[in-house]
Amino acid sequence: MSQSQSRFRRQTAGRARQRGAARRGSSGQLHKDFRAARGAGPQHWSGRRIIPTHSLGKEGLRDGPGSAHLNGKRESAMTEAVEIARGLTAKPDLYAALRGLAGASPEVDLPEIYAALDASAEGRETARRLKAVDQGLLRAVMRRGRGMTATPAEADVRAHLLGQLPAPLFLPEIASSPSLAVLTGGQHPAMPAFSDPAFDAWFAAQGVTYGLGPYGEKRSVYQTDQFADTASPERRTLHLGIDVFAPAMIPVYAPLAGRVRHLTYNADPLDYGNTLILEHQAGNALFFTLYGHLAGTLPELLAVGDSVQAGQHIAHLGDWHENGGWAAHIHFQIMTDMLDQSGNFFGVGHESLWDVWQGICIDPNLVLRLPADRFTLID
Image (cartoon, rainbow, N blue to C red):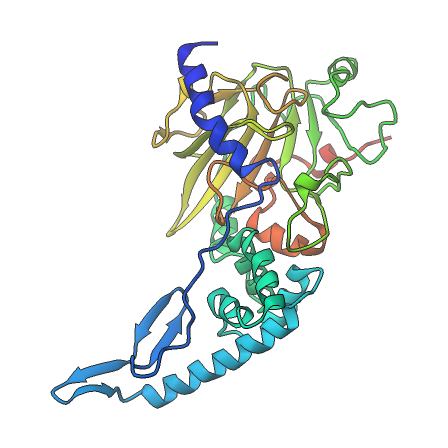
């Protein structure tokens, strides 16, 4: 291992362990109670900012012309937040409860809900469970509950990608090469698990160039505690990327122009190992592509902030010792929002929230452009 590879792994492994393979996300910031203290002047919550609605004249503090209306909206939001807090308290599945309650209260956001939950010990325990998961995911759940797209950029990113001509991820191109759908639902009874070293020999015997693991596939391997969180007993089991299996150390190419957002070594077992996240522009919106399970040559090829051109060599496929403990493959994923993640991202999502996850992580085949039958078994 070169000095740059060793230094890269030491610098990132500690941070990666804190994020963990579960992609649990960081706790949300504890916002101050939205109830303005008497005499401090009326305050109106708008998203994450508090906008004063009073003005200061010669006589001192006085209400502005819209203060009665704003005070009414504030009182209504407070009342709705209390109702949401009651509906959330002690629920086993907080995602489902939050989604159902958010639609009836379009003006209420997480800070107001946390403030209302703080009124009781049981409410504070519910708030603790919510704050322990990714706050961006909670916002996406609330958006879907209100009939909106999961992220603000989702529609723009979809439209942008439909107008692109992406470069191939691998050479020879996947679409023109023999491939096999490596499905995990028992379709290949003799196929070892992807985390079993025996997979290599099995795959080599199939006589194909690439193996393909589909987007949206339900995978029973993700049943351990690292794929659960405090907001729900449900494990995340639906695959958010496309896997492409190929021999270790073959080159990986950028399908789209962009900029290096993160280079990380995610060191936990069955995590991504060496990970690259690129940032891309879709008009005024940003989106991101993730390349997981890469080789330790990554920091020799790229640095954070580098510009990347479509078709540029950006990585090599990693082997068992450096890719999280998997057979050699790439996990390719698109994110329309990074949520509260940095250097890592959820690779599987909740089945009950699939319409939310489909908006956060749209189908990677919008870039790979592979025929649908490549992800099925043909008799």
